[in-house]
Length: 96
Image 1 (cartoon, rainbow, N blue to C red):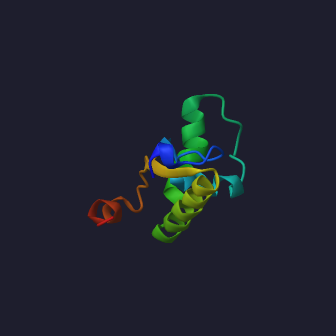
Image 2: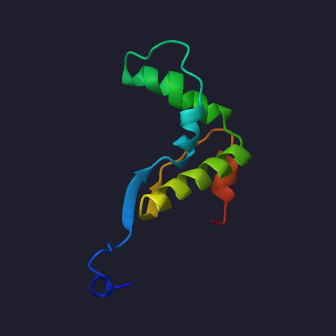
Image 3: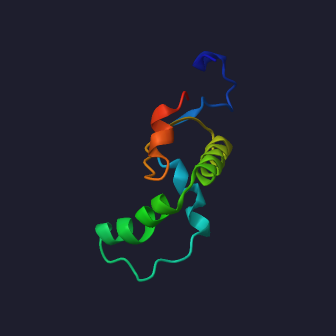
């Protein structure tokens, strides 16, 4: 749809150029074992723990949830930055 075709109360879809769809499951995560005091602590105690815990099914559902949340907020295009050590080989071979 061209911008000139939009009604006065419409906008074009938003673009998110940096997303981590796997983090859609983070709101349900337990608290880290101790309070992080640095960026590296946050990576080690939160995000890298989540990376190691994800299997392919959880990754699929977190991507679906993240995409749904994006659509609900008006985002129609996402660039995802993802690396999960347990599924990296599957992702490399993916036809998606």
